[in-house]
Amino acid sequence: MKLKLYSWNVNGIRAVLRKEALKPFLEAEHPDILCLQETKAGADHADIEAAGYHQFWNSADRPGYSGTAIFSKTAPIKTNNGLPEVIKKKYAMTDDKYGDPNTEGRVLTAKFPDFYVVTVYTPNAKDDLSRIPLRHDHWDPAFLEYCKGLETGVFDNEPKPVIFCGDLNVAHTEDDLARPKPNIGKKGFTTEERAGFQAFLDAGFIDTLRMFKQGNGFYTWWSNFGGARARNVGWRIDYFLVSASLKDKVVAADIHPAVMGSDHCPISVTLDI
Image (cartoon, rainbow, N blue to C red; front, side, top):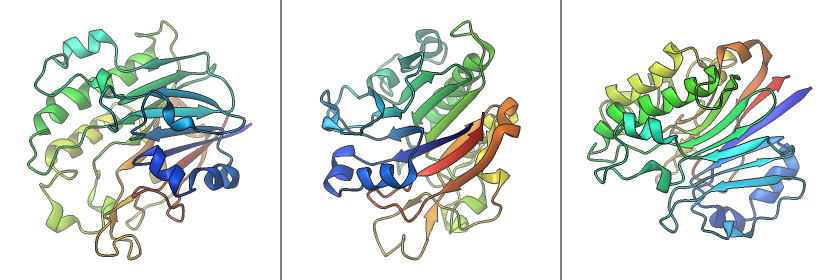
């Protein structure tokens, strides 16, 4: 059975709805599972109409900020919002310095019979790089440990492969942004952030797009200024990664830059389960 998963940072679900971009996307692509980031949705979840989909939301406490969601044609066994408390405490993510990630709706996990799906909206480092310590010392290692814990059964007592996706707010290599040289050391392309991504690969997770596409030109985010999207002057900061045990089941991975509605485009992975 072919299973199509999509991920999309919508930069505000209400904005996507106003632009009438979501319904045509769903009708054209028919994702089995759709993971969203930066939904900026409140308790009403923007009154989304998506026939045939079960909807699960993790909205931030702060209105109009962050947030994640999963739409699935098949209901998962269960869902969990946020990171486990033991992870938060281990990586000192419970104080006021950087904020509690579980109040920002950044992680949403769905458990299915054969795997876990995790959608994540990673904090960006900020222009002044003030969140580099958060990324390097807290967030990146905490999220990696969480995904490995799901994979090995630490957190749910039921080990399964993991598929995680979303806006990771980092370009991994120079091929992942159109203008690498002037951006070295800037947010999204610092040594610390790139090392955080490399740690996922070193832990055995597979960057699915790179199974099928090499080189540059494959971007998922573009600045709203200077006609960057039309000229494809962008960054690849949205990813699908899978456990190594799923590698042979991945039959396709792609980006979808023609889909408008956000400054990010959707990305996808197809598995033969």
